[in-house]
Amino acid sequence: MSEQKIFEIPASAKEKAWIDNDTYLKMYQESVEDPEGFWNKQADRLDWFKKWDRTLDWDYNKAYIRWYEGGKLNVSHNCLDRHLEARGDQKALIWESDDPNVDRSHDPRTGNSMFGMCQNWRSTFSCIWRVQLRGT
Image 1 (cartoon, rainbow, N blue to C red):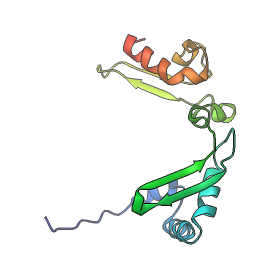
Image 2 (cartoon, rainbow, N blue to C red; image 1 turned 135 degrees about the vertical axis):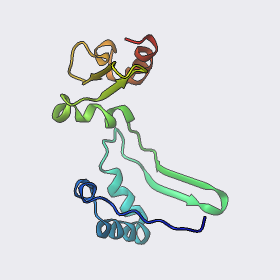
Image 3 (cartoon, rainbow, N blue to C red; image 1 turned 135 degrees about the horizontal axis):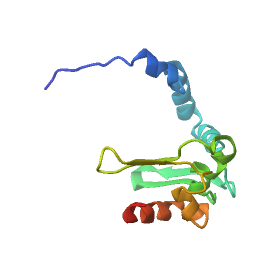
Image 4 (spheres, rainbow, N blue to C red; image 1 turned 90 degrees about the horizontal axis):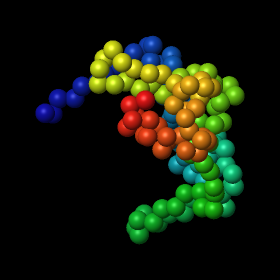
């Protein structure tokens, strides 16, 4: 299998991409030349409850790698909560059963959704599993 196939990216996918190849190459170069500055900029895109004390610390020879030491964030908040105001009416979960005629869509603002069964957003993921296991 020495054959190499190259598949062109469809124009419709390129139009929806967040970055193009030139932007990627520029970002890559920045990450190599100034890794701490680059990763600080990327981390600033998230909501942090406590900003980190040290961005990165690594020693590849010892397999020692640490990121954002001392920082505190909440993944559920960054994935869900912070988007509620602007995007709370969009579907957040689409559940499909084994039966192709049965599916359910849920958004965080719908009162009778699976989100409404959770006591708070912090328990969303455990609630989702509970709901799916019950089939409701």
